Length: 424
Image (tube, rainbow, N blue to C red):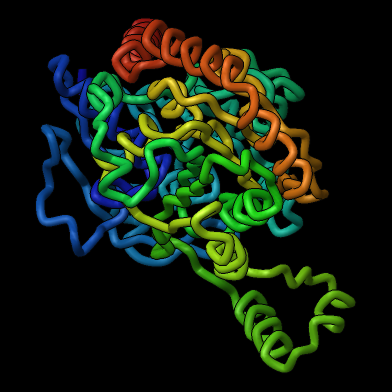
């Protein structure tokens, strides 16, 4: 089978979309399929083939709402004339999907869409875009959702769509079927008896690092046990983001008002000037050695060991769809605590690996964690060692049975063959 996949960024770029596509693409190649990924040109990508996956690069940025620029026509021609049996594009609101909107009716090969959550569904700027989405969904032969109850699949159901499948995300058996490295804590100057809280996510400001740091600062732990917070994060790839003049002006205005000490005016204008991540880390570290916070961007193998050597994973993100980090925590046998972001509640049920801390959503669909409530839940789980052990054992067991990328690729492959059979 010749498969063409499309996503805004791909390896060596790091992110959730990139990781899901990479895990599936590599395993499909290993099964004898020819896989090509159409994606953004990256100067640091030195080869057009990675682990057997062919890369077709295009110098394109943006989306329909913010505007697209670059080799848009070349990408469309590549998709329309390419020699492949089946096409799958991942995520709305980015150019590899948006550039195809005018030519979807000209695509004759079976095509699959993975919406990835419709993060801008409640954003006023995307109102017209999502007004068209029901018809766009109907133009695909099949749609894949990662959650059975979320804004993207619910929109599809509201408009009578039935040609879809729910396929969960997962974590790699190649990464997590490894032994725990007992030297991890020593390498990072973490006491063996410390209670270690871990979070993982990019440093976009939306992944909850600041909120978690505030919660950790407020939480009370046993006086005889040190507590360590590991905040792992990478700077997100912003090369595909185009900021309009209004957005840039608002950002500059906010910075000027902060520099002038006019926080009250900022609040009147609707901005919430919260203390920064650095502020909360400094407050935590003033309590050392009882408490300590470290901000790192660990190499992947070392990050896997961070999962194995922590006591609790906490996700306090403002926006997610199907967070890979919860599956990775389960894979490591690490209990998790998450706010109800994306389909975290569903992942907690599927894996049995953790608990949910309530948090409200704002009108634009962003989850707003309450650090005080989060602190209370962290304190509670820190004391409930037997519950953490049960969550960890259930998560590890259910991950091995259902949520390895090997098992999930089985389901993608079966679906691809079925769609080809139904459409030819």
